Image 1 (spheres, rainbow, N blue to C red):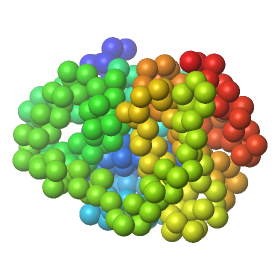
Image 2: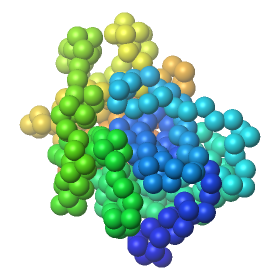
Image 3: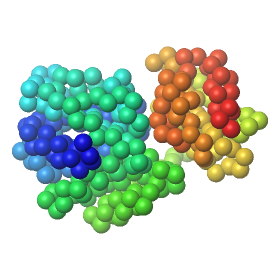
Image 4: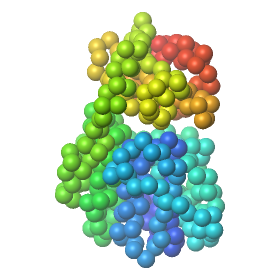
Amino acid sequence: MNQKALYKAILKKIKKYPKIVVFRHQIPDFDALGTQWGLATWLRDNFPKKTIKVVGKDQGFFRDDLYPKMEKVPNSFFDEQTLAIVVDTANTARIDDDRYAKAAEVIKIDHHPNHEPYGNVVLVDTSTCAASELIMVMIQSFGKRYQLSKEAAVFFFSGIAGDSGRFMYSSTSPQTFAIAQRLLETGINANQDVYLKMYEKTLQDLNVTAHILSHFKVSKKGVAYYTLSHQEQVDLGIVAQRGKDNVNLFANIKDVHIWCSISEDKEANVWRVSIRSKAVPINEVARAFEGGGHPQASGAKLATITHLPKLIKALEKLL
C-alpha cells in the first residue's frame, strides 16, 4: 500500500471509532510529546463528537506550559469502540502504556526503521526527520477539509524542532522547511511559543553544564562522552531522564565525530545512553546495545557502567 493509500486508511479508521487513544514511547522526547499532543489536538479540533485521550507516564522534566499533563484513562475505557494510535515508537516494548493492546485496532505512525511492523495499519517513513513531520504530511494530504489550529501547530513544531536539532541535523529536508512554513502560517511565534519553552535554562541547568564540561572525556578517535551516576544526579538536582540534556554540547567541536551521554537510571537499574553523530551512522551500534534509532541520533542501554569501554570501542570502530 502506497503512502496516500495509507493516509486514507488511517482517516477511515479515525472516522470509524468513537473513542481514540494516542500513545507514544517511554521516556518521551520533544517529538514523542509534540506528535502525541499535536495529533490529539488536531483530532479534537476536527472530530469534536469523538472522545480523544492522551496516555503515558508523566515525566516532570518538561515545562508545564509546553505540554499538558498526561490524562488518566481507566481500563474500562478500552473496548471494541476504541482505536489506539501509537506515534514515534519503533517497537511494542517501548510503548509507554501496554493497554494499546486492549483497543479494537492499532495504528502505528513512526519515522524510525520498521524492524517491528506492529498494528493493523502501519505508516512508517524514515525519510521524515520527525514523527510530527510525517503526521503533518498526512494532514496536508487531506486538503482543506480539516483545520489546523495554532495550538496543534505549536505541538507539531516542537516535535520537528526537537528531532531536527532546530533544523540542523542531516535529516532536515526541503519538505521539513515546507512543513515548518505551514505551521508558522497558523500564527505561532517560534521563539515565544516554542523555543523559549523548549530550551530556556535555569541557573541549576548551568551548574549541570559546568559539571559536564569539567568531567567529559574524548577517545583517541574522537568519541566524546560524559557519565552521570545516580549520586551525581542527586547532587546536581536532576532526574535520570535529564541526563541527556547536554549531549549536544559536543555537536560542533572539531575532531569530535560521535558524542554520547551516559546516565544511570536507578529505578530501571540501567544506564541510559544517547548517541549522536556528525556523519557516520550509529544506529546499528545502538541496536547492539539494546537500543536503536536514527543514523545520526540513537539511544541505547548499558546493564552496568563496566560495559562502557565496550560501547566506546564499538563506536570507535565506525571511525
